Image (cartoon, rainbow, N blue to C red):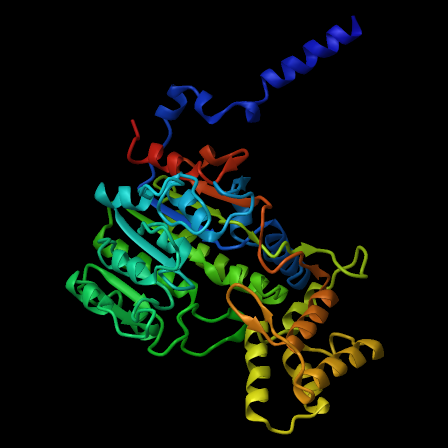
Length: 480
């Protein structure tokens, strides 16, 4: 009898638990009254898994006396997303971007195509064809995997020339990023990419001056890129404070101004925080935290627009995958963490590594005391971040091996090759804060999803990355 009662109780509990119902089981009358958004902001923090978000939240809480938090974390809808691809539990950005933009799983490396190499259209493409304005913004190259997934169809994400051509011919109103990589072919010869852009009546603007002029130029289609000669892979890290560089909030504002002026009735924006992923591939904890906060500043641009149009605006924030397996809690610190130390790092691991490589190329006499002074100034080591005698001796040994004996080898990751001494220095910084990493690549961990505005309740509960585009179609193109 007791067993029978327990069985009935459990069955009743399962029967009335909303989270157990499949999305398709929702009554049609509920969907019919779902508000139709006219303005959609789709934010993707590349590599922004649960650990990095928690690190950013802890940093803000512990360094700003609980007075600040991430805008995204205040949204009423908060859930998680699974990210596996058609070929492996650990996705790359191309397969994840394709899933997020089209609703179709595909194999790693493929962009805008399903697993059978058949082109699939993104929600951005479908909305543009339905008369919406469309803007694509990223802090990395506009022909990179995530932005490319919203307009390109190629079997290999490294086909930069073909991706660039498809950006030019997409008809999208606004595309922004560091720079295209298809200006030259594999043999170093110039391609016709710039001519294709011009033939499609797309205006190229560059740098901060270009961003400032967006509101006064008459062109309907704009590509905003970094200044001439900029590094094409990304616009630079927030932590490096590079003068005159574009920033993600600035590009987001420029895109919004352009769409408000040219397609004020309806528009869609995808904004990617690509530098989050670059920092996490390098296991640079403080830089990734500052990139997430910068990404959140771009979200504030959309949130301020939402506050003026709350019944017509939908904001979604998620990630394509987790990178680095970053955790809050690492090493020998037990339950302790020291997030205020983040602010003493004033240079990214990538920039510090380039500095080390420049020293090697210069062949100048550079002593351990010189390096200690630099580490104190740019990273807070030996002052704010204590270094034991044993740790200093280990660093000095690696310094000698790297700069005097010339016997160290670089650490290669997806986007950078790090000087061996730089790797040891940043491991020390991460450990002092109590930030841990499991890999320099991606993981299969779930990622967060936040939403606010018209139709945002559809994103409650556990979702897969293929669910977002179909829900957006139901709220817009297929809206009753």
